[in-house]
Figure 1 (cartoon, rainbow, N blue to C red):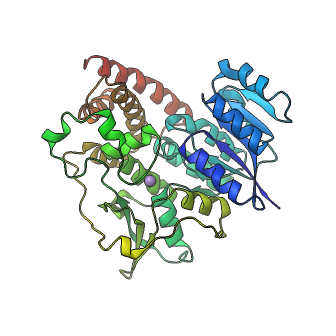
Figure 2: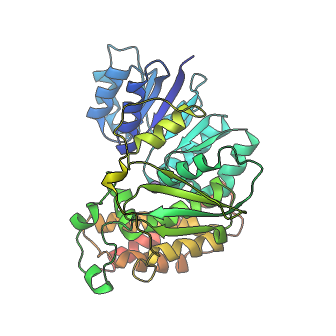
Figure 3: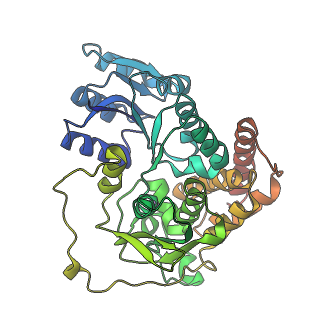
Length: 386
Ligand code: MN
């Protein structure tokens, strides 16, 4: 039996690489659903090639364009957020890979888990915003949350066969991004182009900026907290510029397991899709002689304040990580639009957190409201910065 896969966000970096993995394993997987927000041309091409049962275009204004292009295909076409929330519940889906950008991943993932669908989680913001609610629901519905993020896939792989053994600590490795080692002064005038040039990973613009500010690593710490049920005191970030060790687990006897490989997202994607089986492939192999040195150092949380803010938000709990995420999305967008400078990103996040009221045990509705309120506040702050 082939696994029938739904890809939420099929036109993005993770989405297209997921299709590569599926294309390479036609006996193991088939595409059941493809969804995209705006990229109509690519969605249409993907639909024609992979012949899913259904496609969803998020932006409802583009419905006609998609349905017109696919009118001679046996593919159902839907549009809008509500359709997305319904399609994820389709009987014929075995596994959903959530590869949308940012907060937009939360509600569809919630509906999917509620419908008992296994999730390959490629949208870390879902757990940043609502980790407690999502992981609790997943447990209740006996749903697998399989990590796609390379660090979490590494930890997940290290934990295989260790069910009875408590974790003493996990080490989340961090490349340090394009600005590793820069002083505050040097960071003052870095440009959008500088920030988008990540040394090791080829990713979408939002996550690439998050990698440059180290917010991505902060989000990953929160993601790990929920995926693996660990307190922040057991999560340590270590800078490792080569991005060869994807993360590590230290057990109570002091032994450390690490997972290594080339920085290639197709590996964690394929592991999540094929789990619990590893699938043979012909991706480029790691060569130790190409990496005579592996280096490690402490992250610089003074100049890259987002990482410290994320740990603070994780410890504060409640709706604070939701505020952190929403403020970050607004600030990153403003930076990409050249409305604010790089170092103003943490300023805006910090001021927004101070300005939104704390909810200790938020419901999903509380989080939705927090998200809306935070965006308004953060937006005002970015505008007052000009
Ligand atoms: Mn990652």
